[in-house]
Image (cartoon, rainbow, N blue to C red; front, side):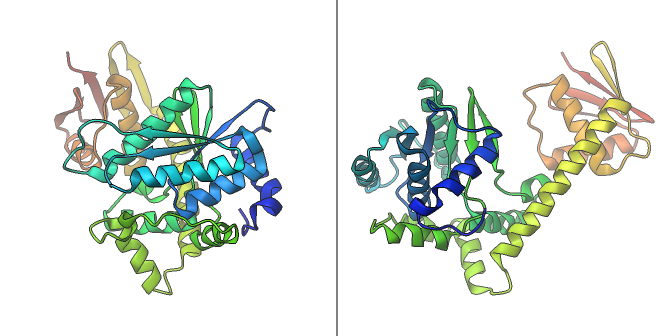
Length: 320
């Protein structure tokens, strides 16, 4: 996506970007939900969506119940929407909150609340304001964690959320500074979430590192993430070929011929085999690596309720 202009002059381009992500033009009666926290990024997205799609836009704000200011911020977003004739809904994360991994739990709850609302109201599209800086920050964070290729590519342009709802990220080519400028040009005062400055969060550290290190250019990092995404697609294609040619099914047993396969292709095919036999399996990377090492040595091991026996061909069987 090219550099953004004010929403009134960039509406046609933004509409075209949404259409590209969806793969088809908008129908006259189709609506899109916009996730709006009140920060500059999501307000910029809201302004662009409204300029492009008008009253087909509905804004969703999630009050996580974690900060005293959250209700007032949701009310501010409601006022912004009311002034523009945009429907607005505040969703609340009710119940007890976990003591550990609170940010991850809040993110999961936020997407679940918005997805469920969309599904209940016949809205098939939900857009978020992830941008180029987010891609760069995510790449740095996950490099620091030793993530694999799939983890390094960052936010995808679109993702199936289930229940007939698809997540769209139409601003991955824009920058935070562009969105700040877009909102400022309208005279709106965006929310400054204190969590964005909390040093205990990895993203805050990644953001500070980018700001303090000129040679860590977000544009180039985002370009690297795109190259990684292309490599991920190619490996997925190769793993699909290996699955079709190297896997045999005999009743409740899968046989996998790993001879000559690169480790990464073996890992992907093995993971698919585990999920075929145990659909709810969510094995972690280190567990897969230990399983592969055991099987490569000719031993048997069990993971996610599936026994895998090594040898020239690996035998996988779901345990009762």
